[in-house]
Amino acid sequence: MSMRSKLMVGNWKMNGSLTANASLVADILAGMPAVHCRAALCVPSVYLAQLQALLTASSIDLGAQDVSPHGSGAFTGEVSADMLHEFGVRYCIVGHSERRQHHAESDELVASKTQRALAAGITPIVCVGESLAEREAGQTEAVVKRQLAAVIHANGHCISEIVVAYEPIWAIGTGLTASPEQAQQVHAVLRAQLQAATAHADRVSILYGGSMNAANAAELLAQPDVDGGLIGGAALKAPDFLSMLKTASR
Ligand code: PEP
Image (tube, rainbow, N blue to C red; front, top):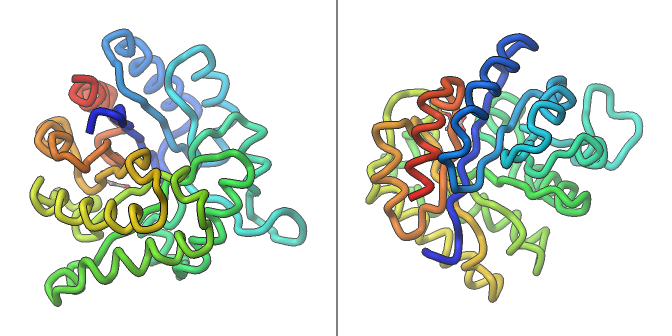
């Protein structure tokens, strides 16, 4: 839809080093003059200061991969939304399936994190998605609606300020991608759910994530409710990421 310019977000997960980051970002920045979509990089929190400096004066926004549901205090190991904001963070992934799986994050916890990000002026990228077993049991729509409902419930009219990422778990890091039709079907369900909650659902970018790469990005991005991508593996290779950014610029 024309009112939403595409948003392409790299999720570095737990990858990188000071040297590797500097070289990857330099290679990406060299190709940015040909890019005309919105772009962001979500990096490990220890590298936010490095990336803030590297991305200064570029059109790429800085993102984090998680945020504490608490404001401040005795929460050893956690990073608050205000701290992220202080380092120029514009986006924060919340509820990534790897965190839901390995850290037992509930829908309610994800909703709290979303609230904290919004209150700090950070755009949460709320991840939803079904497992293979859930898809095969015909539960895809029920699962993603339950996950998004918790976030809508906690955030009320602010919900138009979020970004949603539909990431089928079976497609993440597996090389299996949802077909453009499968993606669009779920994105349309999520759009309708947002429309029931806000008059501004057309402003919400709904990203697809799950083995998106330079070869399949165009057909996914051509779907009416696919407003961009959340990209893991392919975002770690400058030529691939740049190729996808250029595809999203058309
Ligand atoms: C992700 O981590 O959000 C993701 C989509 O990973 P990949 O692109 O590697 O499947």
